Image (tube, rainbow, N blue to C red; front, side):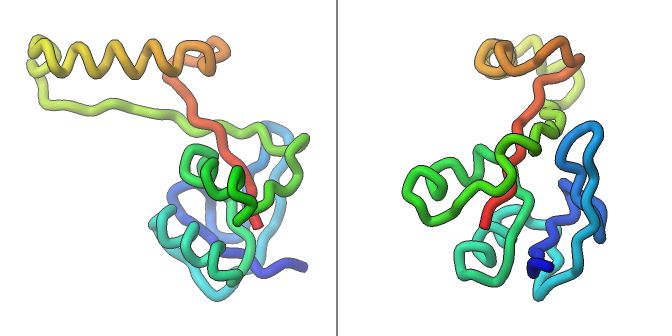
Length: 123
């Protein structure tokens, strides 16, 4: 059994949902946090393995500081929501940002109602 760094926004304590059909039980390791950045740092320090958003660890994977585990199994996605005060959509800078995010994420939507961010397990 591996030592796991648990980040509570992405997964429930005690389990990681890797795909629609696959959930694995994980033990609580040296750190349970509500911060993906803290979980990333703990993983980089070698405290355990983590289940983190791919965008957060892409550079670490490319630089070989982290290694993706189970690349063929992990395909779970988390929703991305853009939240702003009522009426501010009329502001051109807010509308431009929302349009930019939609365009950037359009190819990843796979028919989802909201853009989704890919997840990755890392060691």
